[in-house]
Length: 229
Image (cartoon, rainbow, N blue to C red; front, side):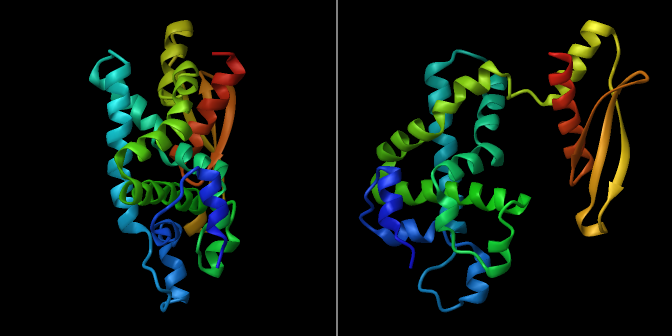
């Protein structure tokens, strides 16, 4: 068994019921190989944690920013998306405490691992809420997640790169960007797309991803950097 007391020290939280903390790290795949494990997977805790996280972030935004509902919704979405949650989980070292099948354990840098970590972070929030209550959970989220909000707002990360690039390109140049698939590789179940973003005939930047949409977003992000926008 992993030493969860180290994780407690990292989190700054001593669990009354340590099994809640352990269960938050149990992925469904682990139980396929270890069906007699004494705890269930973390999906119910994730379900609870997702709701608690949304409530605490929403309350923080409502209390601290007078902006309209639409803007606050975008800000909240940019803070609780899988990318930010998985990065936060990684910073906390949750990757070292996950219970995974052997196959999942090997895929450390995969897209699936990003979602597993994000879900584990939400499950952890659910576990903290059940074990220590709303106040302690709010302190935890303020310390590890809400501190990222100023950077998100300053860097305008709440704006979809494609929308941002299109808005500025139209404003500065009167041109609507277009996207073209430049290359495809890999088997049907794991395709990889390389996409270029163009301003008329100018190839501004390229991006890659496991879907055309993902590749387009990556291309737009690089185009914004290249143009200094």
